[in-house]
Amino acid sequence: MVAGASALFSACSDKKPDFAAIDVTGADYARGFSLTDHNGQLRSVRDFAGKVVVVFFGYTQCPDACPTTMAELAEVKKLLGKDGERLQAVFITVDPERDTPEILKAYMGNFDPAFLALIPSAAALPALAKDFKVYYKKVEGKTPTSYSMDHTAGCYIYDPRGKLRLYTRYGSGAAALAADIALLIKGA
Image (cartoon, rainbow, N blue to C red; front, side):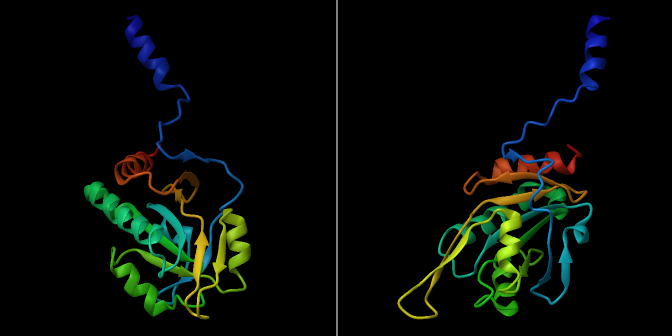
């Protein structure tokens, strides 16, 4: 009898899920986006209702963090099995000068054709980065077009209702990220 009552009360508790990522539920930043994707379609978080949306800021000429993160997200999609279709990866370029829609479409295709790249205008990028608390800075190269971009390398994760829930640091691993996304898909 005591065990049954204990189970009943624990089911009613407000126990938070055990996420590997940082729980930022209720944050007043990273409120969303309204940007054109590499196919020319205007997109917002609301377009992906029912899916977990993972947002990453980067650029296509990045030598390490960007391709590693996108490959990790492709692995997460596989680890989720049939629920992988409920994951939407969104790559927002911090280099709109060089990252054209054609380049971004080809880049996304290297990882998963369902992944989308979004392109803020050079004028809109500073406010967007500020809202997401994302750092980016152009680092001059030997020629005007050989520059690189320093940038934040974490991901923001929105639940299927479009609410910001998690922030995951670069290199957290596909298994941990897949487990967190599975919890969000199940309604955590």
